[in-house]
Image (cartoon, rainbow, N blue to C red; front, side, top):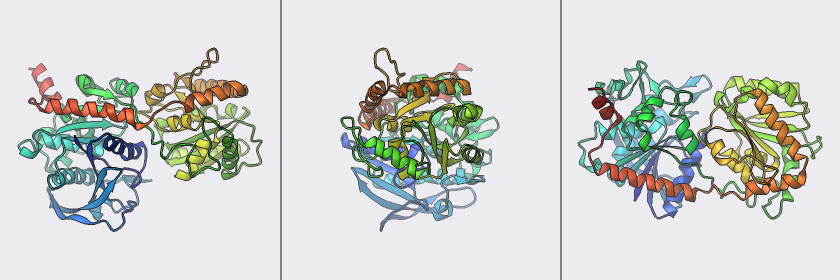
Length: 497
């Protein structure tokens, strides 16, 4: 089967979050299983390409004011996956992928509409896939275009679309005049299609028009069909429930494995954990707390600083948390209010908390390897990757039981020695604090702790199983294309007659 991925980021070329890791790893797993896979990406300023050949010099993309002319660059074939890059410097040659600290770029709708149209047109040259796999709102126009403006194009008639929601909180909502600017028909501006409280919602368009919708954990696929986590689109998803599924993200164990990790002070394994103490000492040194007693448990955090990550819970109980016998190391960057909050508490409690406001991949590896515990108190978490990295590194996760965190972490039970971490359900500082205290108490019994560590290290979250599940979804989507498609809009229209 030929699958074409269209996404706004992908490691190692560009990254702001877990989306990039998925688009970097899943195509490789699919290719290893025998599928033909291509990936279409923007060529950003940060995208490093060596002597990339221009395959299409000028591709015409219509806009209402005037045409844009982009190029398609050859990214080469890596691990069986063919990469193509859409080059249009006016849109993509910027410091950030989506915006600056002041907010999103005001022309994001135009930028990623160009990406979607360019991928469709370029595929006519390089090979039309059987399935377009689109990711998040930035490529959400592909299902919309294929079922509207491209519906009469014979080369796309049997092409299926699978759309993956990586985070329901980011939807691509723009003013109504975006439609004519992008030469999209006004009949899309209805409550049954792309209209959303008086604006145009790209994500909603994909949910209406894609053949199948996936998200990145089973629990999250259920949560987003509720008012609490649906961000206003839960009704659309409930109407599509028969074609909505959750597939947990995998982990790239070539990059995240303490046995082979090139960033850590000492390599170690399930069989031989002796190197972990060296990693802990190296981590304390990197964070400037080397003078602390290395026998104290270290709790690590590596995260994008955003409201969804639950850091307000830490603020609620920080005065009591610092009384515990532990050290907290925090690495990340993001919303200014959380950067300021962490900088403030690190200054207030320098003996207990050390913070680095940065995106640093090498240091992230050190946190995973050198910490004893890893904290993820998320308000919601579609999938989460760090908890799965932590398991592999023998770093015990403390998580809130939501989304992928709930799917991948099993509560530790000292009575039978089963479980991989610690979970709390209620979104409150008190629940977080009591769960941290339970984890720290368990840490004191090192014989049980060794069992707990090894339980996590034995779990396999490689991409192979997830790739097989995606392949089954692709096949179902292709079968859906074999019969006249019925969209949510059609269904609701019929129901309302």
